[in-house]
Image (cartoon, rainbow, N blue to C red; front, side, top):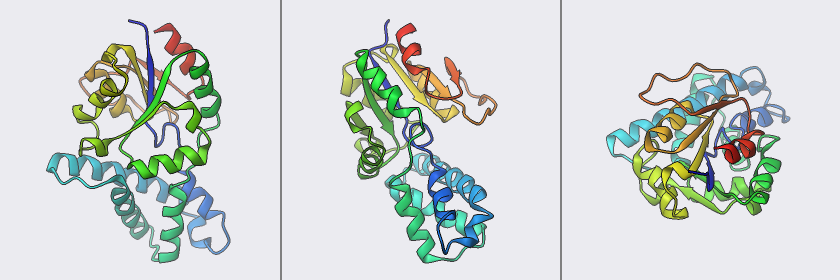
Length: 228
């Protein structure tokens, strides 16, 4: 079946999750972060994801803003950073993460070619709206779908079900794009055509499913959608 909708994970896919730590490290007064911002950004992201999985398994849901703060607290303690003002600044920057450079043109091209577009994310609605507005891509998105609608994080099937409910599509009519290999794999298991944006050249996750396509950035998504 031809692709009708292109749906994207948000954090790490459209928006650069390392941007908050990188930008804070460059600001005056945050010298303690300058030598460790990359480690902090990595740990922050890892704990953020781990906490979503653990909460989903345990049935202990909270919104992604809470998980993001919890992950940052762990990462700051691991880095030996005890600075309430820095924590507040990092959280504020997370609401306005930079989009990857190719994102606006890629989304605009999809819209020009008649594809429905959207986000499917663990993010809380208010977080996603802030990120989309900050990146200037709101006009290129038809829907912003959050796991808060079903009260459980990815990769629960209830989350992927939101796409068909929104667009009236069959799974095979959707190109689902994620920077998380596990997310792209589970999307494939759900029935989507999937693309993994593997910017860091990581190995493929050992899961029952494998993404249909592996890309290094998002620039090729319009052509991929048209060829699928």
